[in-house]
Amino acid sequence: MKKKLNLKNIIDNFFTYFSNDIAIDLGTATSLVYVKGKGIVINEPSVVAVNEKTGQVLAIGEEAKKMVGRTPAYIVATRPLVDGVVSDFEVTEQMLKYFIEKVHKRKFVIGPRPRVIVGIPYGVTEVEKKAVCDAAKNAGAREVFLIEEPMAAAIGARLAVQEAGGNFIVDIGGGTTEVAVISLGGIVIAKSLRAAGDKLNQDIIDFVEQEYKLLIGERGAENAKIRIGSAYPLKEKKEVPLRGRNLITGLPEEISITDEDVRKALQKTIKQIITSIKTTVEETPPELLSDIMEKGIYLIGGGSLLKGLDVLIQEEVKIPTSIIEDPVTAVARGAGLVLEKIDELSEVLTKTEKLAPPKK
Image 1 (cartoon, rainbow, N blue to C red):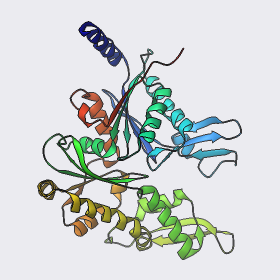
Image 2 (image 1 turned 90 degrees about the vertical axis):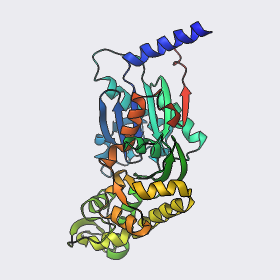
Image 3 (image 1 turned 90 degrees about the horizontal axis):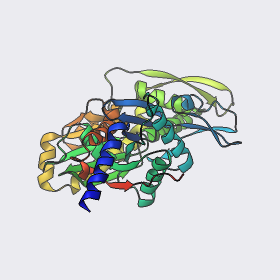
């Protein structure tokens, strides 16, 4: 038995040495791919363009995003993930296959199938976990590991997650906001809220429709959020033009909205996020809360870049709050660090699925 185990380890080590093992932050809005020994090599929108007449995938990532709202009726540019979980299995599989093949094209020789770590939202069901594993397997993975995004984000922020001390993470992505307290390599308390970047975009669309009777697209709303969006009053007044269709006349129209307009639009969702943070603080054991009051709250994810959000959270929760360096790539970097030291950090993985080789 011992000889078989040693032989298996030798084979695994051989495959590991020659394969391009990868970690994927499979986000609702953006997917990032980390290659072992190289860092992040892919950062593209989680969008796939499909010809519904033939079922053919026409474009993935950046090229597909350019098609959103600009295609004939039979070509649909869609996101295969909703709120961070797989909503369209076949399209997700095609997207993963695209990422894996793109990574392997960088090699001059064809290596064995890679091991893959995929970041998933906290609290997803076993069915949702299996969907990710199966999609990665069908896309060409040799072995699949899953890691919860708050844990990956904390590791990406270089926090001491394996020590007996509280770390408070708020990861605001595209589809979900995840609030978690981490200690001793595990998640002690966590809340997953389906209110994040996409919801903030929709808030702006709804506000402009109600206040100005103008129908705008998601790209226009996102642009306004990035340019003048804020959670806390700005020092200088800002405004941005928006183009769309007047719902009364049916004709095209351009208006200007101010940072105050955008703040009003976003306040309900921001309040939901802060309420979730407060609830998590209330449920945190006193010993860990003491650590958190000293270390502070760490904001991660693209949504954390909303101007003044850290200031508002600190004011509301009474705990020092800061945005980590390069918050957008934290989950991918964390999953990548686990990939680099998988034996040492295996306890942070939520589930491992050994995959049988594909049928010939």
